Length: 389
Image 1 (cartoon, rainbow, N blue to C red):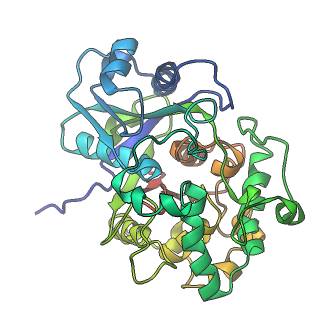
Image 2: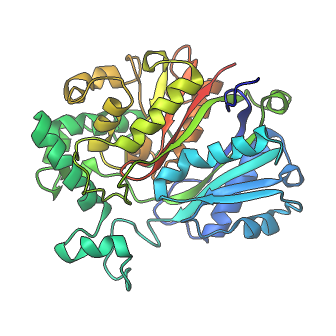
């Protein structure tokens, strides 16, 4: 009996994106359509080839609106993945499952928003008229933004393991260095030092400074997923999906899982990591480069521990600038990440992983075999391992 697995059953054959800005000047639907069209052009496919669409529940551009505007005539699979940034790699997992089971042949995943010029996630003022039930426990006490939600977790982590804000700052330094050489990054040509990080203003003292927080961006990203066999006949080198996973655990909430016994980890990412290593048949040491979701720097250190790159409480010493930079043992976020390139809910991390597989990244890692991608942390989440086959 053949093992039931997604390993090597599908590939990302096309990637597309708009420019990343602070004011796109156009609708989110237009951004979505531009990104999808660019991804199809990249793969050498037409809208008529598409029969599946996957996006986020938070995306404002419904699948049928995208299909109508692009001329996608027959759709046999469509779905949306919840939990904000935790959906990023999950969109690819859903697409890969559809391809592997024959439900669809060419599936496009997309995410587009005006998150800076429109609905800003980091500014809740005036946006909430009716509190969701889960937030009603926290909002009256000032926990109203993603930064505040993350800081409460991260403060416990700092206290337990002796971590400082300067330890978090190394992630910002690495990401901004990579963004500085990426012409598509918002912070192109603008690296920072640890001293500049430490002099940036506090957002949540003593946990998060301004340079620990990701950007707010306008833009769109799309990916084309199809079978490995078909991908090999298309225009680009396929990024084969060696593993894809989603993960949630008991007492999970949307960034506010405060009723757990331990707030110093990200157990959802642990679930994802276990599945990824098992499915791909590799270990953390086999990863050539990684995109680790970096909406806030503390959760990058915690991800390294959950995924097995180092032990509990060891990331503050393991995650050096040298190790995580281009040329190091585990270069991360080579496009600049959400801190340096743009915040497109993690989808731009997947496009950078594909470029690393193709050998076309502006910060290309030597001899790439496997790339790890993680989605949003602090929420039910997802991850991918892409491979060169």
